[in-house]
Image (cartoon, rainbow, N blue to C red; front, side, top):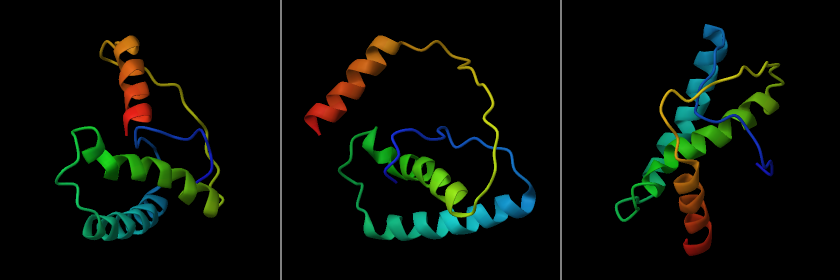
Length: 96
């Protein structure tokens, strides 16, 4: 969990047995987190906490289970306004 990089977007291709094991592990954690976390006052971005946590946990699961992987390139299909995304990122870091 100390990493500063990781696999994002919750996208992966894996064999069914690994997928089932990953989902069982992940959703046990997410359901417990959902019980303990009140997001009723979260803003729209922060309310995505479960997705953010699941992105971080993918690498934890991969590393803990010594799963080998290959990164594949990806593209954004929609136009990205990187300037606005950058400003919003800085705002979240400074004002939260």
